[in-house]
Image (cartoon, rainbow, N blue to C red; front, side):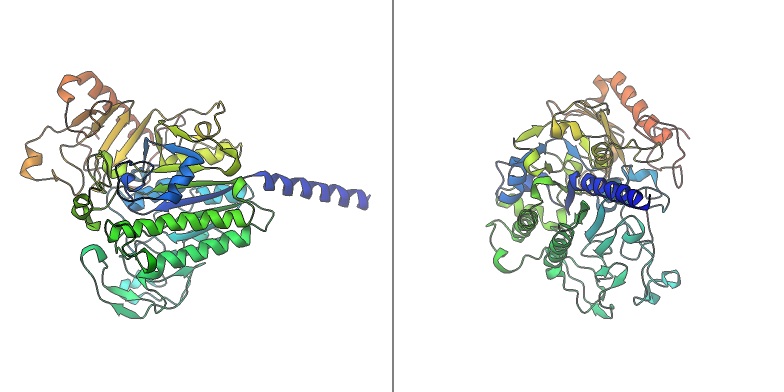
Length: 503
């Protein structure tokens, strides 16, 4: 009897192991402040050539109508991790900084914790920017104990392994944190920099040099792949880069390589990271069964010197209006490419409307799991766009945009309704300026013939303005944009920007 039970157990373990082995590995590479026009497969008129990112598109699906949930860093990362719009949390505008406490609710499922339950080993290498608790942070930033283990970081949000910096590359404190501990204790005060090398003054660890961060991240990501490719379990690597965000610091053979600008050189370093990841997957024999997603967390950032790029005939936003922080397309329309080794042998260009929140429900469908109503409330699966197979999952019909200053827009079909008279960010017209005050309080654009958002036609389509306003209002009040039960939003229910919504 015992022998039969042992045999049965071994068979079950073998089946489970084979089941895990059949599941694809997932690598999500998230560039930081990379404009859609900085990827040459998107921008035939661009001056920066990105052959390795382009190759992903040639062997996969290139989405042309993909959007981040916000036009700045932290909110987009929240959406990727949770499948939920960031403005449903207490973060109604702006981003977190290096000392800020966690934005992620410990009770909320993340893509990492979900994939752990599906038998994946999960790792993150890169820029976290979602907050955690430094040791003794309750006593203030100047009294942080960097020798203590951080609390409520990536390892408590579903990641088996983590190697991160707390926030953007220009935000102190400057330290690598591996599985909750600083690799060396910050003790040096570094001076700030300006211009394209923007770098805020603050405390720094001895082993932290900003120009080496991209290389260090790549080294750790490759090591993670090498280690986990040998295991029976599939793996998920979330690889949020800190480049080409400021400080713009190309090094070595990349200096001058783009023939455009230091920013262009830095973009080529990002392209080379993609090359190294693909080569590592191939060397380990797992490329054919690995889904690679390449995207950016928002549009090009003006501190990287837009004028310098334009002077060389290169426009990081292409024909789209605006840049990072803005409610306009250039702020949130991003490169979004999905490659799947031998499973996607033909190049496909998809015009399907997608959001970075959609990653969650896509991997849920991939694992044949139906999510409950309290998970990924704003996520729609795009798996059918990749596989070409029919699905029972609903496609996204509308998407909500959000600017750095907390202003809203909604997009459905070719129509985009912006709920403010200005850019919502740092571009002109700015909030509270005389120019903005002289403009209509809402903006409506037909993107089918006005992709540059130049002709506000709200007066010609009052019924459409009402329809889109009603959809947006329902999304906010219901706590979700997918079909499910109504929920109460976390945090305050009041947005100062919602002039159209009665409390």
